[in-house]
Image (spheres, rainbow, N blue to C red):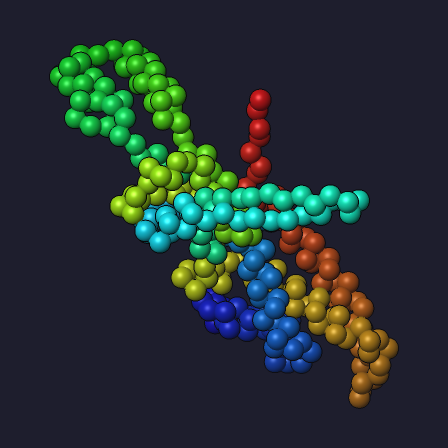
Length: 271
């Protein structure tokens, strides 16, 4: 029981940390469910163990391609002064991604240029003619030649330009869709959220247990604030405000700890 492996196990752990069953926790089950969802969402968005890098394969279907090639969305907008009416169109050059995908780094290029593929491509000929035995080619020269070939490949067949927003789950691909067929595959380099249903060890994460306990404590204090000063049998006085303030401090400490110890630092932009 000290190592929860399920959603209910995590809830029971947090309630015990707050004193249950010795103390009655005045929080509704629906409120607790909402807090668990909030805690897991925050864990997925900020904790470095809340996401994972994956490579997803997507096969284009004929219906999908027809929708992209023929679909055009027209939107009408009115100017702020209310005089002119403006309209614009947007092509449906996107594919829908699963809800758990939160970021896309790249779509791997699959082309048939003579530089990078085929039996008579330059890379193959370089290996065939110059690397026929170990040490036949200077490594520095080979690295420079490879870099030069990659530059040529990017000029002849540029990388796919993509745009993605996790709120609408649309991955826009700025490519010539007329050259694509239903036999084509897209390999996506992306990040997705770790689903606790598939990785039950998430429920036993030390930070998540601490954070959820503080969230439930804050809700408990919020529910009891209106009973401030009420005397219970035996002379016990409720102090919902103190409970609420203590929980707010604990939540702040947990979030600061996440930022300093468990959150990936932002990448610097140069240029």
